[in-house]
Length: 411
Image 1 (tube, rainbow, N blue to C red):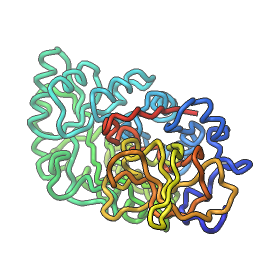
Image 2: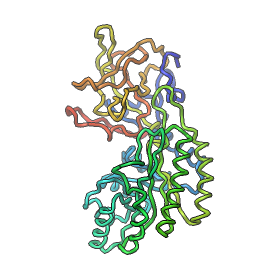
Image 3: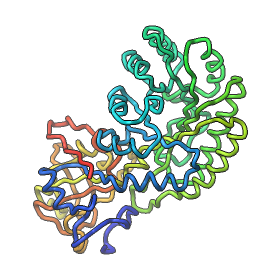
């Protein structure tokens, strides 16, 4: 690839044939014909399988892999992953129903979220999934649902730890948070569980996500193991199951490098050994979403206009921020950065145009890429946003201005 392309790690492993991007063993141009319309998302099942295999290779064999469905809840993706992972974590009743349609047993489905409605809790209890309890009052409502249904609800306690995952894209623990129960309150709550008619299955600690700092991840995992042990001793209970969260990041922007998964796994081997000396029968889960699916997905839209305004070239496409809010920079970026973007049907040519790629929406926020070098593109050419397998369509305002929703395919 020409050196004028921005130095994104994602560009180094592209599958290209005759100048055209390949996905799922198929050329992009053929895939467009198969789908029949743009824009669309495409997810490569082989890449998803390879990522899970990579995790199995480096993580301790005792680690259960849970897929965090909020990253990509497309039913075909979830069904594919159900054959590869040990469990699912869901964050709504809708996601729970998708998970229950897979071969994953209900006991391996955990339900997280700080604002579960009573009808969601009732459905979760009736489905016999594990409810990650996020407050003392939520626990009371779970008890109520269990009594109404004549069932013993399965619960784990989501702990808001007293530490953060440093260098994390999103900090989910430490300080005051809407997620989980503050660590110092958990021991007394655990002492009450046995009297409440609940089946306590373990603890869930999720301190942050999207982290490329190996040492920070290892440190957080060590603190998580230490915190779980401390809580168990203070409460005088055993911990049957511990979800240590995830946090493993993927590179989106120039200068970012892939996580050293081998180093994370090597350190985790020692931590698993340590906690099993205390709780020999404990099961340990790692909950991952973005790390499994992000790099397996692309977003594809078509150039519908090429125009110049005061010396600046704009490529206007039939897709945009209403489909891919993250790529537009409006999903948590403080300073806007470009996702890896290219002209998918003209990869062999020089990147001799500097363009801004925008969507069709009547807002200046509708930017897919800003002032990037790309192959010279014309009307009809295909714009591809890489790293789009996670937090894409379902994290975007698809109803904004009532444009058609994009299609999703698994290839």
